[in-house]
Image 1: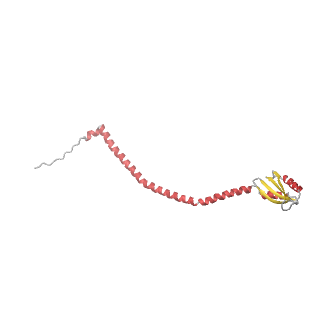
Image 2: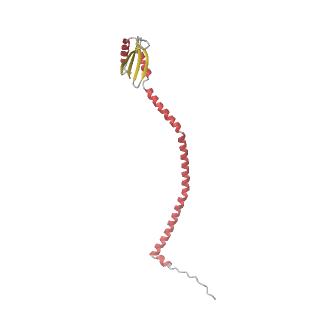
Image 3: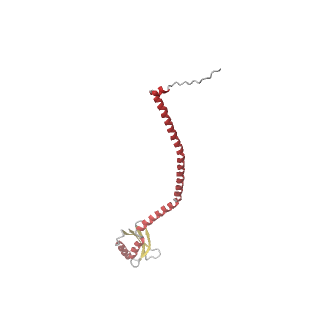
Length: 180
């Protein structure tokens, strides 16, 4: 009869004696510790992989929200431009209305006109008013200049030009500059 073959197992590391030695304990600790480190690393990698889907969804939502808000802001751009333009106009108007209007100066000038002197034209620049008057005599113009010089709101009153009227020769045309 044939004899049954026996399997022979060779174990080169003694089980009990090796585990009790320093080298055996260190080796056993390293193998068990590395297993824990590998498991922890796998959990970390899986968490990072799965969180990527959540972060991508959040990023997509934020991009959509940003696009919507950008569209809203762009839709108000024309309104804002109109509003800024209106505010600039109102600022100019407020500045102009805070200054004394020319009509009050003209009322003052007209109130000092002597009889026989007629107002021909009025022009205003920055801080000056130029008045052209027609008069039959120089004495009336001298009286008019004296009257204007007595007004406290006028800084300086000066006679700048004297001409004879082209249409009516006996009349004289005088140009007066008033500094405000």
